[in-house]
Image 1 (cartoon, helix red, strand yellow):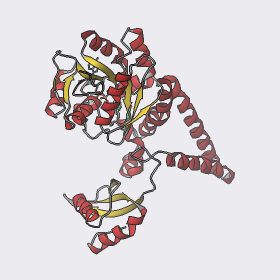
Image 2 (cartoon, rainbow, N blue to C red):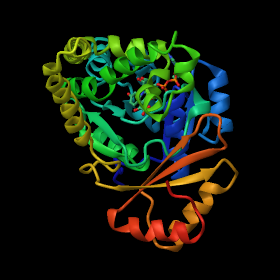
Image 3 (cartoon, rainbow, N blue to C red):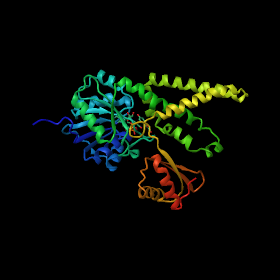
Image 4 (cartoon, rainbow, N blue to C red):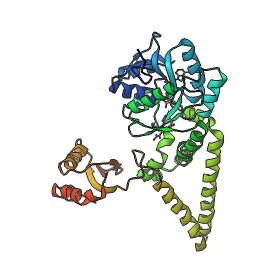
Length: 363
Ligand SMILES: NC(=O)C1=CN([C@@H]2O[C@H](COP(=O)(O)OP(=O)(O)OC[C@H]3O[C@@H](n4cnc5c(N)ncnc54)[C@H](O)[C@@H]3O)[C@@H](O)[C@H]2O)C=CC1
Ligand SMILES: O=C(O)C(=O)Cc1ccc(O)cc1
């Protein structure tokens, strides 16, 4: 009998925090048997109660073990599991890749059964309570096979990514780390720097906060302990991006000082940065990893009553309009909000008409 190398009937998740529990939930939805372990027994219990799997007891090797602990603990936990013979194949999900792989090699881990990986999806909240089974849907998920990794180990990790509904992106560990410095790690520090200005902002300023500042600072809510581990694990590439960002910020501040003193010739320098920002933002791919989709946005005023969004979606359904994305903005102190529905441009007229016909207020 031949053994199917991509069989993923049983998966052990070590580290039942946000990411580990989300993986458990996603795999359970696909019928995989998931076993859960964490040094914090409360985290395992909560993950189990959420339906992410059952508590792990060492028995027959599982098909794949997923090490979902902070980056600095990946190598030692991997070695521990391999010494127990816990799984046929192993991966981790840490946000940095070169350092954990080097640490695993230095600890004498078996690199033939291990393929490091990193889902590019997460939240600014930690722990199993923040987990979502759909966290990875349509998201990129990097895998970084080393030369020592077996083809079967790579296949097993590809199968994990597929079962979680994500899109696999194969990349060398050093390239991964330089890339995530630009798209994840430096943005996190930049968001923290902007959010730090709010720590002693006046109540008037905070009362005027709209969606923009929420968007720019959302990720700054992440766990500082976890993020110190991530940033230290990718320090040089992140420092390089931050140096470039701070050059731009410093030049913008100098130009604005000149403008403040009536020197209009400094305007174009600011415009140039804003235009580079528009260009950079426009290059972020759409939610399924393809080129950024040119959706149109339909704005609708909604009352802060239960069921309003459901009614809105029902109308979209009735007129055959697919909602690609939805964003809600609440008016501070008012029982009203604005729903922004992203739809195909050719659906705008029909949706606007349908909403007006049914008495919805469009701004
Ligand atoms: N937070 C995010 O948005 C994302 C995080 N990641 C990566 O996923 C990994 C886990 O992060 P989160 O789930 O966000 O953190 P979390 O703080 O929600 O969960 C981490 C879990 O690991 C456990 N843990 C820590 N050290 C352990 C050890 N030595 N043995 C067993 N369990 C241990 C903790 O008790 C905790 O339950 C990290 O490597 C992180 O870089 C990857 C993608 C997104
Ligand atoms: O909160 C979000 O939107 C994120 O993108 C979070 C995130 C944090 C760390 C990662 O390694 C990957 C993704």
